[in-house]
Image (cartoon, rainbow over all chains, first blue to last red; front, side):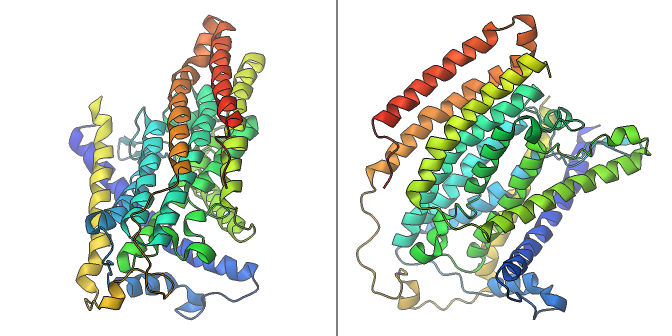
Amino acid sequence: MSIWETIIFSLIKILIIVHVMLITVSYLVYFERKISAWAQNRLGPNRVGWKGLLQPFADVLKLLLKEDIVPNQANKPIHTLAPLLALFVAFTTYAVIPFGPDLKIFGYTIPLVVADINVGILYVLALTSLGVYAITFAGWSSGSKYSLLGGIRSSAQMISYEISMGFSIGGVLLLSQSLRPEAIVASQSGWMWNAILQPIGFITFLVSAFAETNRLPFDLPEAEPELVGGFHTEYSSMKFAGFFLAEYANMIIASALIVTLYLGGWQFPYLETFGLPYGWYVAISVLTFLFKEALLLFFFIWVRWSLPRFRYDQLMNLGWKVMFPLSLLNIVWVAGLIMIFKI
Amino acid sequence: MLEQYIPVFLVIGFAIIFAGATVFSSEIFGPKRPTAEKLSTYESGMKPIGTTNERISVKYYLVAMFFIIFDLEVIFVYPWAVQFKKMFSDIGMPVFYSMLVFLIVLELGYLYAYKKGGFKWD
């Protein structure tokens, strides 16, 4: 493919993925409210549109027409930079996540991933580390005590769980022999899912992903009863919406990563042996990816409305005294699997 | 080789434009009616006491230091992990033992920090 074709196909893929993500985010918020209502025996949003289905659009419109308040105590440049950074991180990570096999159309072979690069996993890790800055900047620059406490707690939490996250990925790399997400998916053909081969690594990664996305039971940065809104107490209007959007987009990215690394990616087990036409094979693979993703997103919401919040010391104990040794153990476990069973 | 990275730069450019448009759109559409009360720091309706330019507990720096120490080791594990299968069929057990020694040394450092009370939070 020439450079121009690469650029055009990439732009088309980027536009499609960003739109799918934005629509998913808005309806994720809607479903979160509906599921929470269902969990608490309420009705949930049901006024705007049929069954409240237009609620997300009403919310966005309302936030768009609100005043953008920057408090006097705030450091204005950094106060503005923080939501920019949060959104930037949330909308760049999807680039390396494969969501289907190569699409063959009009004589072109288009890989269903925006950027098929060798350092895919390092790219993801680098960007998630950058995400810590967004929250720390927001907390520090607001000039409010709630924000500061939320920001500091959050940075401590996120860097603590990043270590077990990194070591858990080590176990995946042992089996895939590559940092390319495509190769990681290919190494999990059939039922050789990493979640089945290395359950410890799967659990440590899942827990770390919850902590990295600041979801309950790890949502200390914005623990409402003690810190009001946490790091985004002093944000209003679209800057607040930016953080909100980034949080839900991160949830989508985290589930996509879990699917790619541990649940076989876009692969439907043994689909290639069914002898389907290639077009159907691609369609079913993409649908499989979306289905796994949807299940994980439901799991994220389900956990949020089922578990209480951790205390700060419990959270740090779990991160350093349980998750860290377990993720090291996982590496030895996977190496042992390779040596004994030659997989 | 560098062609692979064209989409990454496109994604980054797109994300910058998108983030900028989102954050600055309220400056265009939202009203601008600042008052002294509105611009003061939120402290649950009370008059704000002091500023936030105070010292932060040293414990947080300790967490940052542990992070730097242990997160660097992740990068040492990755090249070994990627090459493990191939090198194991070539050389055999020494590939595993060398990493085990590394992990044990790492674990010793971790136990030392544990014993010294580095992981006590309150």
